[in-house]
Every structure is written in C-alpha cells, then in structure tokens.
Length: 165
Image (tube, rainbow, N blue to C red):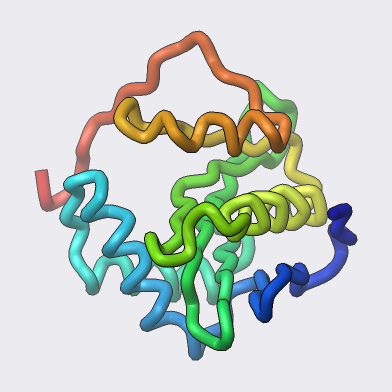
C-alpha cells in the first residue's frame, strides 16, 4: 500500500490505525517502551521513559513518536530521534525503537509502523533514517530490507554518560 507522506494517520487493515502519538496515549506508550527495553535487558526506568516521550511530544524538532492502535488499544510504537549531520548532508533521523506487542506480531503492524515512520521522516525532509538491530533480533532484518534499508559494514559503540554511570 502506498501512503501519502503528508497524512497524519496511516490506515492499517482490521480496525487498526497508525498515527502520531497523542498525549492521552503516553501511559500506553511508556508500557510498550518498557516491554521493548525489557526484551533487551535494559532498565531505563519508567520516569525517564515518560520524560523522553513528553519532551518529544512537546518539541517536534527532537523527532516523533508513532503509535499503532488496534481496536483503540496501543499495540505498537516507533520512536524516531532527529539529528543534524554531515554524513547525509542535513537533518536525518534515528529509528531508536520499533516495537509491537507480542500478541500483534506477524500481522503486518510492524511493517505499517515502519512505513509510517519513513513517510513522516520524508515529510520532515530528513535526508536519511538509520537504525540498528540487536544481534539476537535478526528476525527483523527482513522487515527493514523490504522497506529499502541497507546494512552498514561498520560497528556501533556507545559510552554511557550521566549520573547513572
């Protein structure tokens, strides 16, 4: 299905919808992000997750969050952070999280969330959208490849900073 990149809500079959997260969906979004992070053995903490969600909703320059609802209940989430970089020659995005509740997997909801994220990134004139896949989550590589993502040959590293180090 070809989506209009200027649309705010992206239609999904079977009573589901994907659109920019609304403030009344924050509690459900926080629950989904916590579940996602648990799958990766990451304990960020509810308050910090909620703070990030609220900051992104308040300032679209930081990125955007999409929610996928099935019969009114949030079942999927995608968070894209923006950055300005020289590699892509301008504003680009990082697909930090893409998560679908286990009860709704293999139904195309992840694909719809991903396409909506691509469309929203294009709407914002981002030059690229990057992501990473955990070594033990290779099952999603095909999803990203079907949407045109190409693997990188470099490794990613991180340095934990801040008061929780």
